[in-house]
Length: 496
Image 1 (tube, rainbow, N blue to C red):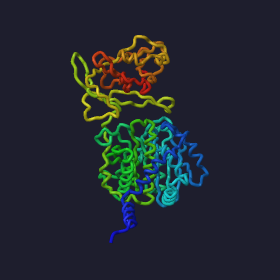
Image 2 (image 1 turned 30 degrees about the horizontal axis):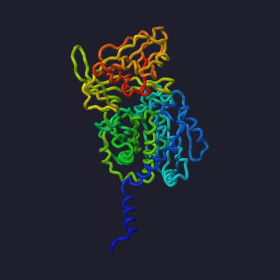
Image 3 (image 1 turned 90 degrees about the horizontal axis):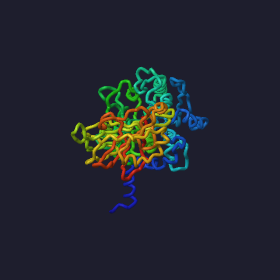
Image 4 (image 1 turned 135 degrees about the vertical axis):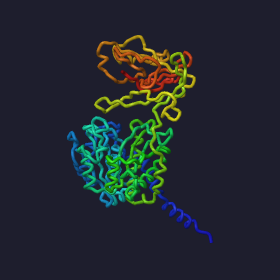
C-alpha cells in the first residue's frame, strides 16, 4: 500500500529537522537579510570612541530588558560598562575591543541590542527562547583608552590579550574579575585581524577567522573545548553561504598569557572570532552584518543546545590563516638596471595612517616584496607583461600649496611620465609631514629629495609602467591608474 502524500511530507520534515544545523541555517539566512532593520544608524564608520557609544548605552538605562553595570575603570579613568540581558540558565559573556582598533563586533553588538528590542517581526519565538534560556553579558568596549587613539594596545603599551596571567592592566583585571564572578558557560572573545590574511593557501582573504583556544601545550580537547569547536563548525556553515572559501582558523598553539586560552582553561567554552578583510568593504559594514548573523545564530545554538549535533572533526577541516595576500600584486614587470633587464613581481600593501585625532585615516603604500611572487596573490592584480617599470619624473614647477596642485590635470602629467610634483621650499610645506591628497599624484615637500633608482623593496609604491615610450599605467601611492580608462577619483595621492 503506497504512503500518502501527507505521510511522505511529514517524514521529510522530520528528516530535515533532525539534520545538524538545518533550522539554524534557515534562521541565519533570515537574520542576515533582516540586519538592515536593526543596524545602529549612529555607527557608520569603524573609527569611533567611547563617547560615541555612551549615548547608546545610556538610552537603555531604565529599560527593563537590561541591567547596566559599571564594572571598573580603564587606566585613564574611563568607565567600562557591562550590559546584561536575558534570564536564562546558560550564561554567556561577550567582550569586544580589548584591542582598541578592533571595533567590528562592537558595531554588531549594538545591532544585536536593537534586534533584542524588536517585536512582531517574525523573530519573536527566537527572541523568547534566547532570553529565557540564556543570560547574556556584553562588554562592548573593554579598552576605551586604546579606542581613543585607535591603537591595539592599552595606554600603558600592554597588549591586553597577553595579560591574562600577570594582569598588569586594570582592564585585564576587570575581565578576569567578571569571569570569576559570573562563571560563564560560554565566552565570545571578539576581535579584528589583518585584512591580508588568506583562507589557507589561496587568493581568498580570510573575512572571518575562528579559534577554539587551547588550554594547554598538548592541545587537549575536553568537553569545554569540544563545544567551542562545535559552535565554530556551526558558524562556519552559515558563513559559507555569504563568504564561500573566506573563513579560516588560527593555529591551535597554546598561548599561556592569552585570555582566550586561559578562559577556556578556567572552564568557560570560549570562541575567538576575528573579523578580517573583504574587498570593497574598508569600513567593515558587510563584515559587521556577518558578525550580527553569526553571533546571534551561535547564541541560538547555545539556547537550544543544537550545537551538540555538530561534528567537532569538521573544525580541523577549516583552512588555517595564511599570509599569502597583498593589497596589490604587479606581475611580470620588466626592470632595467645597470644596463640589464629582468622581470620581477611587486607586492604592495596600503597601510593606514591615523589623522584627525585618530577618527580618520589615509593610506601610505610601500613595496613590501620584490622578485618572484608566484605563490602569493593580490586582492588586486595587474599583469605588467611587456611593460617596463620606471620611476616617474618630477614636474619642474614648484607650487605654493596643495590647493594649487589640486587644480592640475593629473592625467596629462601622468601620460607625460610625471608622478611627482613639488611644493615650494618656503618652510611651511615641511610642517605638513606625511599627509595625503585626493589628487592622484605624489607630492614632495619643499626640500624633499625625489626617490632615485628603479622602484624596489621598501620604496613608496609610486612608479609608471611603459610600453615603449607610452605610459600605460601609473601607480601612485599603491593605487593603479589605467591611463586609457582613467578614473582620478579612486585611490589617493600622498604627501611626504
